[in-house]
Amino acid sequence: MNEHRRRKALSDLVQQVHTEADRTRASLNSSHANDAKAVDVIWQNTRAPLITRAASQDGFTTFIQRSAIYDEAGMVLGGGPVKIDRCFALTYLHTATEWSESTRTVDGARCEPGRTLAQAAASARTRLATAARTGLTDTDVQRAFEVPSRAWSTGFDVRATRRQGKAVSIETILHLKKAGAAQQQCYQFDVTLPDGDQTPPDRLATARPVADSACATG
Image 1: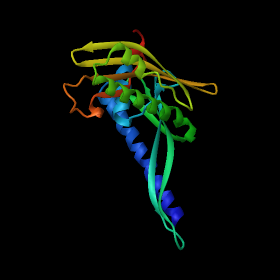
Image 2: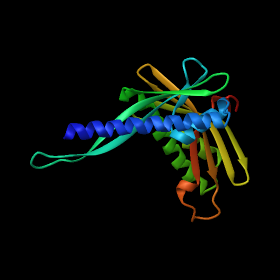
Image 3: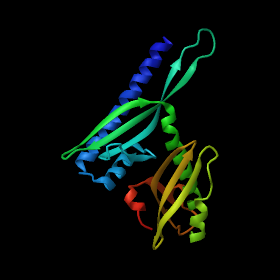
Image 4: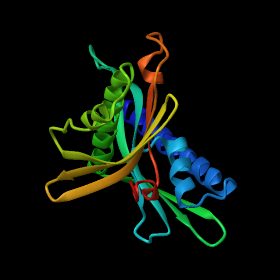
C-alpha cells in the first residue's frame, strides 16, 4: 500500500512539473520572448533562482526542486505524512520560429546551487528592506551584499544602483563557488523607500534573476 501511494505521489509530481514546463513554453511563445524577456518569463512561471544559458546557447536551462507529500500507513503504530523531494532540469530552446522545452529528473545535488543562491538573495533582500527604513545609502547597499554562505563561497558584484524618487533598483552579479564548481546569476533588487513604519518588510524589497545583459555595464 505504501509503495503504491509513493508511486502515485511521485507520478503526480512529475506530471505537475511537466504541466509547469508546458505553461512556461506557451508563455515564451505568446510573448515572442527574446533573451532578456525569456529570463523574466521563466522566472515568473517557475520561480527558478538560477537560469543559465543552455549548452547550445540557443536557450536556457534551470534546475528546480519540487516536493510531494503522501500519507504512509503504519503497520501498528507510526505512519503519517512522508515528503518526497525531486530535482528537475528544465531546458527551453529557441528555434527560428518557436520555443521548445524538455524536462528530466536529475540528481538532487544539481538543485543545490539554486537553493544556495535563493537563500543568499533572500538574505540580501531582507537587509535591503531593513536599511530602506533609514534611507538606504550607498554604504547600506554594499553592506547588504557582504554576508557569505557557510557551505558555498558566495559573493556579490554590484554593477549598478539607480534611484528615482523613492524607488531604488540594484543590478548585481551573484557568484557561487564550491569544490571547483562555479555558478553566477545576474539579479535585480528593487527597493521602495517607505513613507512611514507601517509598510510590511516583504513589500519594501524584491529580488529576481534577470538576463546577463542587465549586469553587463555598471
